[in-house]
Length: 583
Image (cartoon, rainbow, N blue to C red; front, side, top):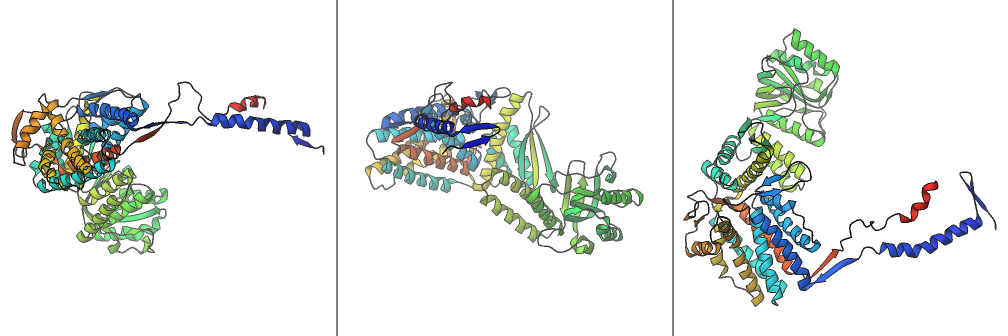
């Protein structure tokens, strides 16, 4: 039967339609052939392991040069800005991309080791990389010699548990400010000034306080400490200012009104204003926003009747704003009007609904609340709740925001501003300061052990007495026994000493704290000399290294993408659509 389809003024007859269908059917096999551009490169046994191991070695060599007090720096070319000079292991590891596809796969596996250690402890990434390389090398050699991978892995894991028990047994808690300063100094590559600044910061804000690192504006490193609750919202109107010289608002023994919603009707807050006047106390209003009419009324009262008042927008956005308002309520002993699940209205406010602070200071940028009148038990419960949330969350952003809330309630905030003569110098020092800060937090959390790789060497004797169920498992224990000598060996080599001789001499001593000071070239009591490592850093480095490297020993096949020649069109392209230009 003859038919016609009309589209945009163009007639397509049955014959034309048949030719289009036939052409599409004949093109289908060609399209299927074109789609087979997804072939993989598959390698087995030694052919797969050798290039992976080469990649592991290249990355580990680049990272290992930064280890110890006499470690060198690494210059990294960046896609934007100037080159970066750093001594931070994880920064070096992240920057490496190898040309050979299989070598790059091996390097990426060790990058995961460094990243995991950095996420868990914030430091120790170089130690983890050196350990992973040592275990992978020994493991690959064992498998090549005919040992069973599963037996080796069981032995490696069994040995790791014994080493962790040894670390726990020789670990001691951080009790003095001097020990905090020693941990920070060692992690900052022996920089005494950085160690002192970090120790002062923790002395000011306490163990629960937050310390952050920022670029400074001067050549010197400086420490700024804020006690109490501070948030980044200032006064809404400059007419609230009562200190013209400092351009700020400052009152003592003030009442605090908290509102989660927008205040648009001034009549709703008149009862609260009357309460403030009767009690002869200043009033701080923290709300989502204040409408122009209500704000103008407040400003008028401030100017004409000398009403001591200030209005501030609530900090944060969304759920973070709601939670922060509840934190302020807990700290001041107040009530949040407009919060979910509450029916109270501002018009019905009583003195019990208002919070109290010993002092508050507002600038155009931020607000500081000091000596809140909240119940101590309520504050402690709120702090514990935030700690639990930090442990449960997987998001780095959420952890950062929760840590800020914890610091506001429990301790304070210290900002360490890193100075330098150039951006390159500031960047290099900032990496060291961040490492030192993370190491100090880890030391406060789990204690300290002798540094310089000595803590791991003290587990060698314990590994000699492990009972194993097979020859392969015993070889796995031997692999770990040799691998845990690598950090001390590398630190000595970087200092220009013979690493194997240093390790031998340290192992001869029965004293737990006896070790080698690579900075001076002397054997000494490392703890007494202030050469210490956080237990958490050493533990995380070992666990991350064993986790990835022991899996590498079980590897017998690698399936990888076949690198496409430069300039080749990507698979699945729209090459058949070239005739669409006439449309």
